[in-house]
Image: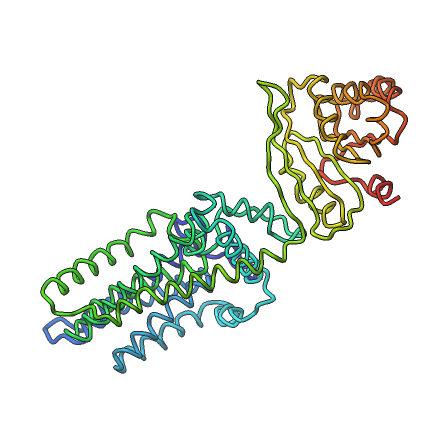
Amino acid sequence: MFHYSGIERIQLFFDTPNLCAAFLVMTGLIFCGIFFMLWKMKFRGKVPLCILTGLLITMTWILLGNTYSRGGYIAGGAVLLLYALLLRRPVHFAAFLYYFACIAITENGVARVQAISDFSDKSILHRFWVWDGALRIIAEYWKCGIGPIPSAGRYYSLWIQPLHIQEIYNTMINDFLTIGTAYGIGACFILLAFLIFLFLSVWKIWRKKQQEWILYLAGIAAGFLICGFFSTCFTTVSLIILPALAVLVILALCIRAYWKKDILFKKGDIILTLIVPLVICAGIMTYGSIRNRTTPYVVVHSEIQLDKNLSIQKIRILPKENSSRGELLFITPDYEQILRTMILPAVLQGYNVTAFRIPSEGYAADSLQQLFQKELAKTQKVHILAMSRVWAKSIITAVGRLSQEEKSRIGSLSLTNIPSMTAVGALSETVKMLKDISEYPVFLWYTSEHKIPDIFAEQLEK
């Protein structure tokens, strides 16, 4: 359950209050469209229908207020304001004011509206960081994107998110940016061009025929799009049905209007449909590229082939500043677990870091010896950090088999989370195995936080 100031936020049958708010915005706009059309008609029984529709609108807006979704508040208010500005009738201005009155009577509703401009709020601040990261991902993977959900969110969570935040994202908390990161800048261009064509066609049909109901249909789609600016809405199938139906009806009307030549798509309209998305996409690429240049390190992914049947994944991360404080070699079953708590902090402190993803089982000392020999041949001095619960014995054996020259290049060896660290009687076995490699500092430590202990960090400083 989600709460705001100790008050439970309504989410009905949706996963989050923000998704619920998107549904309520579209539902409320449907009721508003029906009310506006009834208001213009003259027939017996109009008043009871208007009252009933007004009650439905009131109930919907009060429910929306209780979601405490700022994106939902903005979406509903923006569409109703657009109705008022385009149609310029008192009933539309009254509907806009009534909307905010319904939200204001919600407990702490006014405070929530005022919080829209509070950019120190963590929820808003984190969104800005995620959106910034999304633009960087689009610029880096502009051709075809980084891959479908949750690829972009996981990439941001691992590599771009500030290190003091440990959130895990599946999407970019924005429909447009989520699609752009998944499928590239081409998808951004196509989506923007389609939306401009769609709403431009609605504008032309309305100006030509003064059919207000097409504006109300477009309002449903617009409400969904605005909600999708602040949350990821398009992945919820039950939520996308209403805007999809609205868009299909609008497209059918547009095709019919163009076929009958009721409206024409002029040269200026074509330029607008193509140039605006082009400018926006160019802006995304420019901003993302500039931001990517500020990354303080360079990452190189590769694979090491030790024999015909054995290859392991490798990442090499180097600070962009030329002066290096030393070489660190991480051996771990999954370097993503320690990327943000150990590897990147070490890089930001000025160390060149190499990390190998090695399966936690079935790794013989011979294979590890080959790996060490390959890496030691490339450097003068390296600190080895082995993150393992299973194959500490193989690591110690492999290091013990190295030549004296190779051993002289090892600055220190650190073994963490090995089984003997949790078994009091087995510690002597580990110590005995270490006698052959006692020419350099050896550290044994256990951690459940995937974090380098302060005592080891102090030794690296020395």
